[in-house]
Image 1: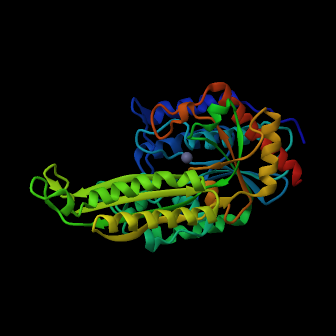
Image 2 (image 1 turned 90 degrees about the vertical axis):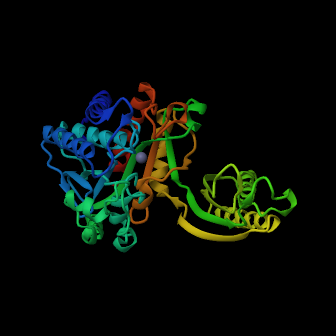
Length: 411
Ligand SMILES: [Zn+2]
């Protein structure tokens, strides 16, 4: 392979400029399908023009930029430019700008890359506006059902189809983005960890073996609302305490099964200081990289909810909010990722992602793998999100090294 000079510092400069253009004192403001998100894409398009590449959009609004190589199918590299409101500067943007850095390095080389290199910026990874995460990558993977999202509205009451149309995307045609699979043979994504593990281990980069599975349920407890002053303690049907007991039981589940459990939302009715709660709605989010363990976690949570309801004379109902099976990345790519992280004095073994990423959707249809950089104090989705510059540089350079390995392994 010809000499390819990669400039990780330039990638960090691009990230800082993106942050200047699309962030404010409260953090990144690249909410998908909005003005700042479009500005972010305009900036990416400017940077691509510098290296003579014109991007294209697919039917789901994903942005693709292809550097022709000596053979096909292409190797895709990317992540997402969209952010949550008041988000961090690196979540998603790191993977897109690092991918651009790889394309830039290869355009400066004497020979074309052995295979096409394809940058992808997935549309609406965060789902921060309509609650549907991984919009563009699921359309690519063939798992987006327009009928399932059609009724979604943003906080201003605007329908998803109308907002998409303003961005040139027809919701009914979005699944046609799956046609993009044709030109692509694999996918790599660099991302920040968004958790505290790598910082605690003082490690700059790690290979990721897959994304955790998730079970998210809503438990509704119905007891009897009654007067706080006149209802004796032994005659209450307190739905709030049944929900609280379930939340505490959920907290204990990971001790036996691994994974994590979160009771993240609780609504009490009537929700006033002077009434015993007659109704309580509790959400439980269970995550585990092992499918069997995840199923057992859900069963334990259900048993606990039933026991708590019975103990307090409440009725219980359960609704699914969302679920996804654990997704393992491609073993061959993960092994190559381990090779390059080893060379960079990174983590000795691959880790599982507790957050979801576009790579999880892509992995359904293509060999995919990820690399993680540490997050300071484990913080993400906040303006404090950051990664020490030396770690950032190592992460970006490791992606470049991984691309080199993949290109030569499959030459
Ligand atoms: Zn992300």
